[in-house]
Each structure stands twice: as structure tokens, then as C-alpha cells.
Length: 68
Length: 268
Image (cartoon, rainbow over all chains, first blue to last red):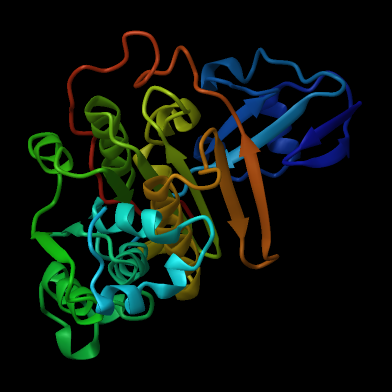
């Protein structure tokens, strides 16, 4: 399955949920990202039931709280 | 049109000769009012550049005093000012750069009880705060008060920023919804920040403020600019306003509340 993650083309096995994708992609703190799937932002309680499909465009947007 | 003095014509000549700014654009800058929330890593470069640009009235908010550990990145403060209120230290440098501007200081921390009263007097707001409770509160207040603003966040070698036009472009909560759990948050004090990275992001925020004031170019509406200074790679992530957004969608929010403020340590 070919998908795009953070602008990069990736080849991953079929049937992954967003929860599993976060593990495969080594996102250390899933609670610190907002997941965008094809222009829509997912709620955290939707991750497990959302299955990634061929051609999906996914972005992980990290919370950044610094400024001082 | 106002009459520019010879001093002003010379001071702002490099703006005025810019085709997209010109005398009209510089007049807009001189007539503008910008509020900078936080006189730290982001607020320092923003305050220096907006003062230099001639933003007519600049408000600056911070309740802290200058600490020795601030000086690695908070370039508006100096070694001799350790212990001085940050807003006082910042005002000195801004007025030294440009005595023609008016600087108003708010030596306080913003919360739900005072933020609307303060932001209402300004045309554009800069988020230069260092915690999520403040960032979400600023977003809520700017949506309610209908004030365009610049969100900024930095961590380690990275930064992100977006510009928000309330009720027209996506807001911070359209993208990030709610503050992350407190025990998961790495902060600059626990995770570190390369000082120059704060300058990179702050100067982008100052540029965005000036673009919106002058009405030139394409502000970072409906996109997040994210960079990683280690790879020195920059990326735009595009999105749209979320019609179901907790803050700016549908009914949206009507009243402010304080988000839980917790002192957080990085998860090990």
C-alpha cells in the first residue's frame, strides 16, 4: 500500500489503523500529535477504527508549546 | 495621508522604496497597534522588529522578571537587567530603537478575566507564550474579539506558526483541538531550545504581522509552517477551517475559561 506521510511517499502493509500507524512510524508520544487524514483532522477516539487506505495523505502535526 | 517628517522618511526609507509597501504601507504600519503576549524567546525578536518597523502602538505583556537562563535566546534583555521586569527591559530597548512609537506595558499574566479587555485595543496579536493553557486562551480570546493573530510554538530545534483570521481561516483549535495531557508535554525548560530557533520563528511572526497590517502577500492562513532547523527543512501543511471546531465552528465559544495550567515535566 502506497501512502504519503508528512509529505513523503511510504510503502506500508495493508490494513493498518491510525493507532498502529503511529507505532510503525515510531511516534513516541501519540498524545502530542494531531493527525490529519486527507485534509480532515481525526479525534483521538477515532484512531483505532480508522483504517489507512491506498493513496491516503497523512500528516502528523506535533504540539509545540514553547515560546519563552 | 499624514505628513511624514524628514526623519521618518529617512528612517523608513527601505520600507518606503519597497513596491509592495510604499508610503501608504508605511502609513498603515505607523497607524497600527500590535499586542505582543510574552517578552521571551519569541516576543524579543517580534518586539525589536515591530518597534524598528514603526508600529505606532505596541503593547507587551509579561509578568516575569529577567532571569540569567533567559539571555541565551531572549535577545531584548541584557545581563545587567537580570531581576528587572521583562516588560520594562523590553520597553527600554524598543524605545531606544525607535522613540517615535508608543509602548504600553502590562506586567501581568493573562487569564480569562483580563485578556479580552487587553486585546480589544489592538489590531493584531502575537502569541509568544510558552504554555498550552495560554496558547488556547489567546486563540479563544482572539476568536471572540475577532482579532487576527499569529500563533507560534518552538521546541528543541523546531518551530511552527500559523496566522489566524477569525471566522475566516482555520483557528488553532481547528488543528489541535485541545491542550494535550499535561504529563505528556515537553517544554523548553525541560526539553531545551536552540536560542537562534526562537529568533527564526519570532521574525516570521513579525513578518506576518507586518504583512497583515500592510495587506500584502499571503499570510499563513489555513496552513501551518513547520520547520526543523537540524535538517533546515521547511514544510507547509494546508487545511481548512473546521466547521465543527470547538472554538470557531458552529455556535463556537461564547465565554472564556482558563485551561488547566500545570507545571509539566517531559515524559522519560
